[in-house]
Length: 545
Image: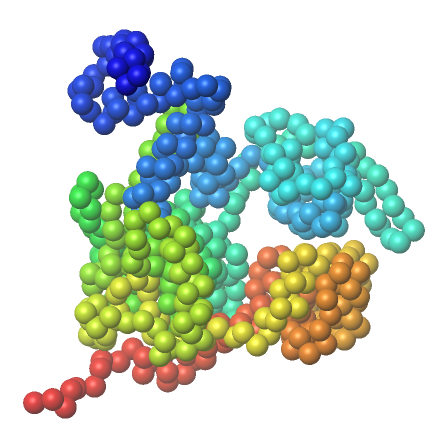
């Protein structure tokens, strides 16, 4: 029986050998082995197989065994990954929300295609190219596929406009798609007469230019010191962070360097010789948290290592692996880790990981929470062997994963109750805010001519919170009076911020949010007090002989 089985496999082996004839492989090469296995499955397996998917699964499987950040993406996934970093896409130029089964226009891009044809904030898009979308459960990605398309192409939309409770119009528009910028600066404004605030959501192709423009404008308005908000910023392009650092560090400062077995050492100077940085002087505070990663850590780490400013918040994510994009002919892509990057003092930003154990890596933030690190500074796990000294003041800074801030701010868990999380999970706060703006847009605009007036004067009333609670009751969210009252300030802040964003602009949300955010409040306290000088002082001399 064994002899017959071996004989029956001989034609298969000969067939595979014929398939591979003329290929530039050694007979015992891994490439040949992989190709023979793929062809055997594709041509001999009992059932039909999707050959493309099988190859993709094999690529994913190989990469998963390497490290947590080497990955494969399909052509569609690659486009979705690259688009936010490239700085623009082609579409109709609106910010929207899907609330239940209705698409609400939150804002139109200034000068964009939708604004030019007359679409307004508050409009509901009910049909696209004669296909109804109102009343149909759709994901944001599905909506974007319908509205986006090649530059210069037209899309027909039908809009429902409510001018007043008794005035409802249906209007048809033809919109010609155009390039729409994707901004990485969410907000840039003066907190007081001399303190600027800039929030960056990602490090993209245009980030440095956006920040330069913001710094120039804020300096004209009187900025002397700057709070740079990198909380929840997952990173992006390495070059974007070094370009940004070029405006913050002294001329020619080292921003980062990389090392890898198959990648040359790369020293990135922050600014070309002879070019004057825009903000190399003046107090600087950088905000980070546990979701600040990659380019955010390069930026905050370099600021800390050069003693250029104070880092405030919680230990950052710990992504210090450099991926090289390897495009494939069909538009898919492999992002392969080729190096580690290090801060100017030599700290490896990457947190520890076990190859092939991606689940444990993804659970790291949860483990930090369970361990108490997010709430208590003395719970941060530090390794004495990873202590480094800053370049100018010789202050101790820590490696071993992420950037440990100079000033720790605990996570406030009191307001984030289970009831609050359940209401958020159903999207009810957003739905309530949209409904409130629909009914009160003109009145709010009449009462508050500017967003600063809105931030100072608008209040979320107890009746508004009760209306949100009633909405949650209808959606089956189990009510808890104690948790509702504990979360009331948080509910109020989010509602006010969303209303302000919908009526004014994105920066309004952060003006409201920052008044409530412990990391911002601590950053603002430090930048305006002696604490800044204390934190940026050389360590006291040791008493040891």
